[in-house]
Each structure stands twice: as C-alpha cells, then as structure tokens.
Image (cartoon, rainbow, N blue to C red; front, side, top):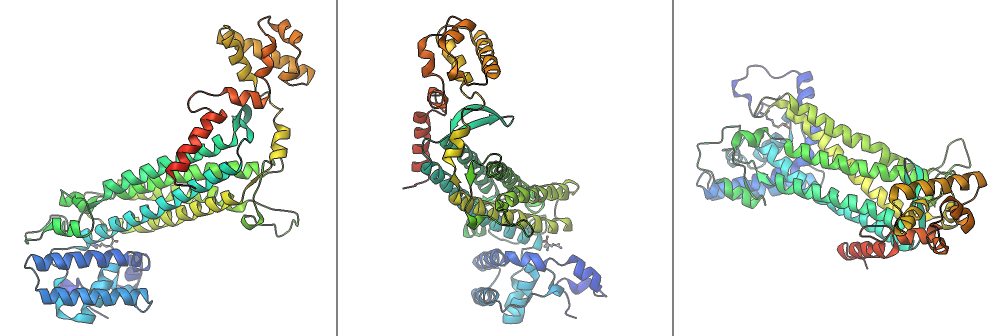
Length: 460
Ligand code: ARG
C-alpha cells in the first residue's frame, strides 16, 4: 500500500471499509479542471513570492499540463486510495516530476483548495445555466410569435376567469425566467471571491500574495477572513436555492402543458418527437418530458434541502461533512440543465389547437369583468356594478346563454343604465382588447411586451 500524503504520524493504514467510505474521488474528479487551474495560479504566485524557484514552477506547470491532457484523453488512473481529486492530482504530479511537486502544497490546505475549486466550478455552472435559461426564453417568445392574436381562457383557481392573449401567458413565464437569471447573476457575483491562501483555517505566516492568485483565477478579490473562507458554503446554498426556484417555475410550466395536452383541455398538441407511448395502451401519446420536468424539480429541491441540513450543525471552519456538498450540487446543476433543455425543445414542438380553443371560449362568461368595468365607466360604483353583472350572469345561467345573447331589454330589466354600446364590451374579442392599461393583456400592451423581449433576447 502507498503511504498517504498525510501518512507521517500514522502507524497503521486505514481499513478498506474506511477508505471506501471516505473517498470522494468517485465524484469530485469532476473538479479536476478547477483544481489544476488553482494549482497553476498557486505555483506561479509561490515562485513570484520567492517561495519556489522558477524552474520548479516550470516543471510543475508542465506536469499539470500533462496530467490535464491525460485526464482529458481518458488515460489518467483515478485511485481510490488517494482519496480525492486534490491528492490524486498532487500525487500523480509527484510520480511524474518528482521533487519539485513537493513544493506545490506550500501555504495551501485541501480546505482552501476544495472550496476554491468549488467556487470556480459554480461560476462555470452558473454560466451554463444562464445560457439554457435564455434559450428557453427564446423558445417561449418564438412560440408566442407563432400564435399572435390567439385568445385563451385565463384561469384562477383553475376556473375560467378572464380572456387573455396566449402571448401574454407565455411571456409571463419569460418574466419569471428573467428573475431566475437575475438571482443566478447575483449569486455569481457574491461567490466570486477567492478563498485560496486561507489554508487550513488560520491563514499563513508565509509571504504569499493572495491578491495575485485571486486575480489570476478571475475572482473579484481574496476573501477577507480565512476562517470564513474555509467554512462557508452559503454560496452553494444560494446557488441551489436559485436553482430550486427556477425548477419550481419549470414545474409549473410543465403542469400547465401537461394539463393543456389532455383530452379534457385539448388546447395543445406536442409533436411526436417529444412524446412517448404506452406499453399496453396502443392509442396513448403522453407528454412525458414535461411530466419529468415537473418530477425532477423534486430532486433539485431535495438537493437544496440536503445542503441546508448538511450545514446546519457544523461548527466553524472545515468539517469533513462538507465533502457531502458536492453530489447534491452536481445533481442540481445537471438536473436543472436537462429540465431547461427539454422544456425548450418541448416549446418548439407545441402546436396550439386554435379551433378547439376558440370553440370553448364562449363558456365561462370570461367577459363578465369587462362588463362590470363598462358600468363603472357609466358612473356606477364598482360594488354595484359587480352585483348587476352577477345578476346578469345568473340570468344567463338560467337561460343557458352567454352575456352577449341577452337582449338590451333583458339587461335594462336588471338595471336601466345599460345602453346599446354594451355590446362593444361583450364577447372575448371585445373583452380582451379592453384590458389596455400598462402590463395588461390587450393586444397593444402585449405587442409592447413582445417587442421588449424580441430586442432584449436579440431574436430576429
Ligand atoms: N475531499 C475533501 C472534501 O471534499 C477535501 C478536503 C479534505 N480536507 C481534509 N482536511 N480532510 O471536502
């Protein structure tokens, strides 16, 4: 058995069970790029500070290049007995270049190393998610552009409420995704501070230059407090919180699309390329990908909860528990990226069933609020107009008709304030256009919104 990098004070080697239980190489090898980046910056700084010769630095840099290309060629052997990515790379470097490698860990601990790697990894991961969010926004805007002027029922309590333009509904998701991006960007700028040089927890007496490594790695500045630097995982918590909120948004989108694809709604049809069948029922076509988007949001939320519970009992500075932060982090990112990509593909595949939707629009008295607003314009107090329209709806219910089927006499019978122009306010087409104040669903307001997004997302 190889002597551990930390083996000096030990008389016995760890048992196989402990070794297997404690290793993290099986998952933290995902951090190899960041780990090598960090080591390059660290070695360069050490030689600049006179803590390592230039020739040692150069052989370290060459060795790291070689290790990186071996990893990328799939030729690198990851060893469980070397525990984690940091020790695997350092030990392999020693195998490769010998003596100079032993200087690399000067003024560094795995405690500051791992959290530096993690911050770098999160930075990249956030950039990847931001791109996917934008792609989904573009897909939603394009879907909206393909369906200009389609009116759909708007729901509250899943009961028919008011008519809205489909574009308005789709753009509501685009807005939510924009805030999701904003949260990730906030998180990115807050996490972009460099822990390297905090060492185990107390910092170091060696004359390192933390500003130099921080700069080299593209961080804003070194972290101010070495204990905080190795203790903190709130950047992971913040990241996973932001991911969870995005996942919840996607889950709601999934729910709506699944519902709308049902026979009962029949409002949209996804293409076959995003649908799956049943092993027993030959007729079935299921919107599985969006059901899975809804389902996988549970994992993303679970990953956040794992991290919260992981951190809550820890005393300050590094604790080995923190090794458990990586799998939930990786899982959250991988899952969310998949959810975003599939949602965008699904959006591209959707056909809205105009005829079917239009046929259902007369149901549910979607124009009732517009009628109440009509009476307000005639000077009737809103509470009174609410009551008048309520009684008009009741008459429709007993006559089994729509508001626009009531005659002027019937309406006047309820209240004499009604005039002939009332019919300009009835029916979904008239009604939807009356919603014309800022942010409303009328076609002009929606065209403004659409214009905003087309420009912002650079859609041509
Ligand atoms: N594999 C460890 C982790 O992921 C690296 C840090 C270990 N530090 C230590 N002192 N054992 O957290």
